[in-house]
Image (tube, rainbow, N blue to C red):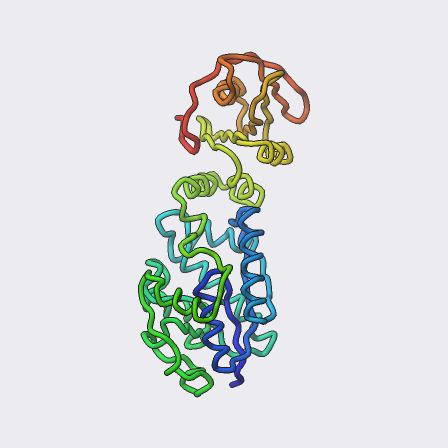
Length: 324
């Protein structure tokens, strides 16, 4: 077994420290970062920059892997269920380990390295879950977790003496005190703040995704729209999305083929996108509720023709609610 491993980088503190700990043992490391459809555009850019920065700090090459339709399938039908939101944590981890292991084999690396800490995440970072994930990903005893290694069974590279187990750590739980000490010791700065969490764990966002799953409409375009604007679930399985600013209005206009566009005529208003329905009057009243006007005219464009209707504004309502 050689001294080469693939490090799953996240841009956060735990993963980069894990890489540094093994570099101290002269382990040759390559980085791996997986992007899913559930990164927002801003978060995708920020996260990539953080990951790139951490890879540069470690002075290692970095492989970027995009997980598309196959990732949507595990969100829709997770074998091991969702967490509190729509987060398929165990299925997600299995997929990412599989992809990282495929990359490891390409570059003739013989083990994986992660920043996982025992007990830090309730669904996927306890012993039984870690063992289940490794087995399903077909990487049993090949995942080195330097931060918690002494609390876990020895891995193959440890047993073979490639990695000195005595120099690994025994961190457990959600406290980051030890990690922060290491960051100070190594003058590590610029890493992502801990506890950022997965977008799929957000209860409001999870409701949107579960709605799409229930209607059989979860695809990349709808995932993109799910991250934009205020969402209303109307009678008849109709969905209305209102832009919250000019940027979101422009995005909705680009997705006009998904439904019907609405906009206040001659007045400042959000853009609305009505999907799978034609109750323009109801949608127009909701839209006017997000203007300064009690009533007005609303321009309706269904891609074939334009119409102008009059409507009375409804009071503002919380988005992501069902109106049944």
